Length: 230
Image (cartoon, rainbow, N blue to C red):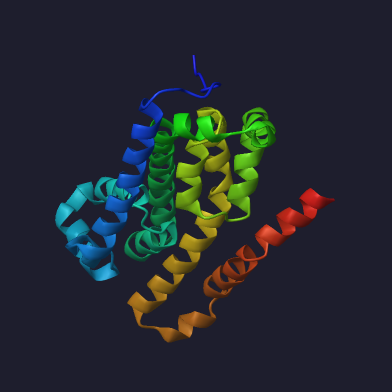
């Protein structure tokens, strides 16, 4: 049965874990920004690696997405790479699977290393919000995903709260479907036109529709906020 930490832990354990989490975040930033890993986060470089993987390319990309999320690589960049390499539809599938597993892994890193320390810092004023997140976890996660709250920080941040993992998982899964599909459909469509070299296709219904969806996606957060306010 799933449990959620309810009491602030005492002793040095929570502090040591919190320091480990901080060191993990710093190491992740260093790895992505100051090592050769950064050079592989391009359409050409990653595409070559995946091409050499053959039939294993989708699984390798999903693994790259999972690790990338845990290393604080922007989700938008990883999604763009997936759509540019695999196209609109397969790109959407692989991106969504990678995002779900990566978000879950980041959540558990935050929960394992940071929750106890965060709980020890929560005073009476913040306790009611922490409890509210636990009671309304699914709705809270779903809402934040729909308004495009920064993906990776939210993955780790939710691990510091009392939200139940299943609420977080289902809220994330449902909340990112629309935005992920719109973005991968747009990038994948442009990729197909670019590959064909027929620039006249830029005026095709599919391209116009993908652009319209992409523009519409920027209004989703505003629509959600308006509906929630009403």
